[in-house]
Image 1 (cartoon, rainbow, N blue to C red):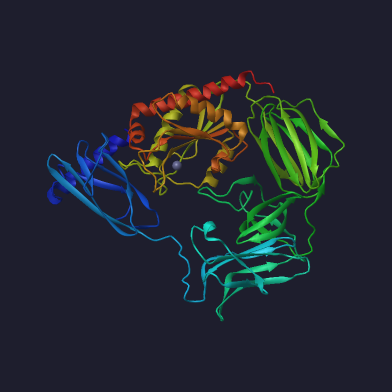
Image 2: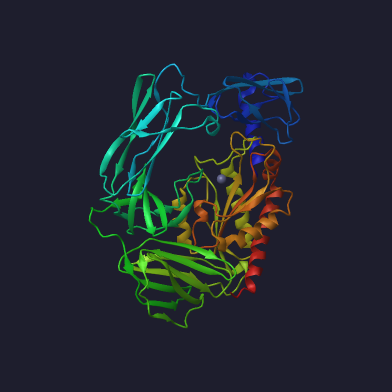
Length: 589
Ligand SMILES: [Zn+2]
């Protein structure tokens, strides 16, 4: 039974149970999905409405007529004024009117200039706003907002400049300054003091953040801890976290030469830094040698499912990996390593690896380059066994048929984690499980072996899902989700299907499925690369995230409620996998 039928039954049951206790419930109803509460507070200037009523009703929001879709969905993008916005949503069916009211309070977000009549420095906009560790040569950047046209200094009388208002969206009185940390200085955990002077009056303010200038004790050495510690390229962040440079493992030594808030800066090589959350690192005592190793002889040999490259080091150094296409290459950078490899033993038992070599890119950056036998990479794992870095490269399956392959299907969300919400009350977690079950049936009909990351309506964290995926030792991972806009976008405007990958080696799979999905009546949202979704992160298995369509879009939602359409999507996904396997057929690298 699909979710839409379930929903109708639930509504009918509710009506039967409630009987005449709710006026006109037998003849009409109205349910608001978003906003989720009767009273909402936001800084957004627009807000999404998602609601449902009986099909063929007429709906109005504050007197404005809204379309009622044949699913009963009613959506809109509501404009918000500063302060309390009152809304009344009304549905009329056969003369029976149902009304729901709610409020959204829009808080002011804009920052205003500090008034001229008082000499003051304010808390808002102050920088640094996070604790810092700075090394010699680092630049301390400071900012403070206060009375315009004043003399503002920081630390020991260092002059700050007032930014022109054309650079600050019209806000006067924003002052900035910089200070370059010298090798002589030694400061631990001090707040930065600002002083403003104007017309004989003055005022001082200090930062809550504390700054340490540690040229004599940096770099410190840290050692990674916990499950899947990772390195980010920078301090940027978004909904899924900052862009990831690498996933590591426990026990890897890092050279740490700075800190911003709760992120350590890691010096990887002469010209490369990365960032790691402090809870993933244990600091070793001052005086510990920075991580460094010579590389020794290598061995390369074949196993039953994969080939192994073994690179011996003196200690566990950080590494990162990426791939290149045309020709296909697996690149593994080892930071802190210097070549002393004069001996690479290549056994002819290898099947996945055609050739390999290395390059000393610069001091502390040792690059391993592996040319696979086939154009398509079927997955590889990098990890330490003792102090030896082992790279296992999976062989291409000998029979490229669905019947010969093992799949892991991942239904997004589950349990308390509902995922996105459709206007009719459709939940992403239910839709994804239904789709995965249908996909399982379709693949099993073709003879495939299928594993699933969840079987029922329970929640599991992505890290748990990753462990499960690894334990299945499958060939292909497919994650199913449904897309949604945020709260401030017009639900009618954004729709369509999309597929996602992180590693370029797996783009071909995501593209093959995407092309097949586009044969359905779905708009093109895109084939999206370098995506920071946890289940797109493994290099161990070709993987793709399929964001089938937009739950937030009423037209897409109706398709996602339709069993026939769901079967069509499943067929297209299977066809996409089939296309990709054909592509792999003639694929010598
Ligand atoms: Zn999702």
